[in-house]
Length: 99
Image (cartoon, rainbow, N blue to C red; front, side, top):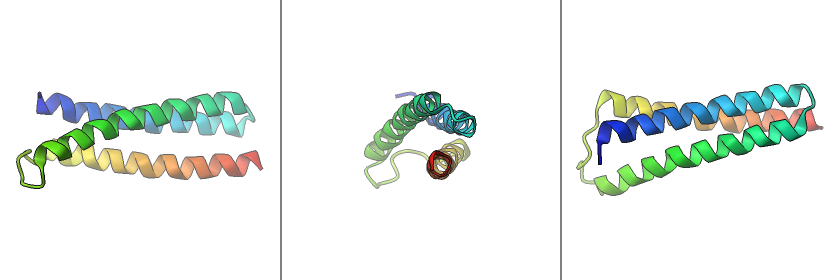
């Protein structure tokens, strides 16, 4: 496993997830519900890809510090967590627009 490539996979997929959620919000604001739902689905799929890599890295580490913690690793984790929070909030906002 190329650790740097795996870490970049987390970053890019987390960013894609957040971006698609923002696109969904823009569609919701325009009452384009089908497009909003499609963007949310793409957001969910990107988040799954990022989380899959994160889970694999956690499995490799086995809680024993086997995977080195670098600044880019910390950045990837931060990027994923803030993306997840943004997506959760955006979903709530979209539901408010639906009402």
